[in-house]
Length: 231
Image (cartoon, rainbow, N blue to C red):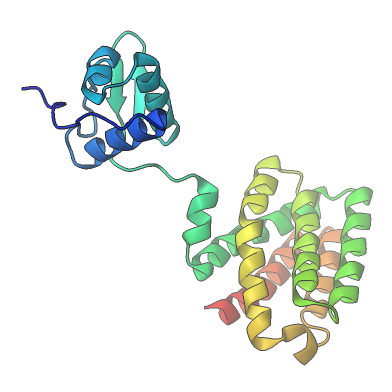
């Protein structure tokens, strides 16, 4: 049974995008289920009315979306019925409370590790960031949020775990927008001029003192307090 015959010819331009979209639709409709081997380039090129190079580029686009995977000497196989979102895309559409819940878990451990591993340079960076956050409390909401995130970033950096640092960097844009939206609703810096200052100062001092348990405890309390405002 020739299952490609329903694909149909394409308009002349833009060929690669059209070819990728047509193949994507066929995979989503179950013409080629997950695990199935796609027809060869020559067959697809004939059915789509394009050259083999166009088919090759379209398949490369589908592979980049996580929908197909070539196997050396065996062909191209379907690996997903829908494009696979990358992590930043998933974060952008995730519920803010869910993102903050994971951020809390990440930063509690980061604070504990920071207390054990901080260097003199880390200490200087945290204290400088705390002062910048204090100075930003009376300014625009977005500047205050940026200063707040920058302070937390110095604590994460002091953990000296590049995976933790990368994860925090991935979370930061989604967190930034959520916090800016929250401040726009309640005007936190003006309603509470020292908003979170004591908690952040306690966090920095716990890390500086090398008290991992205190650092984790303070980080949990501060982050869970903010999480309650977002949920």
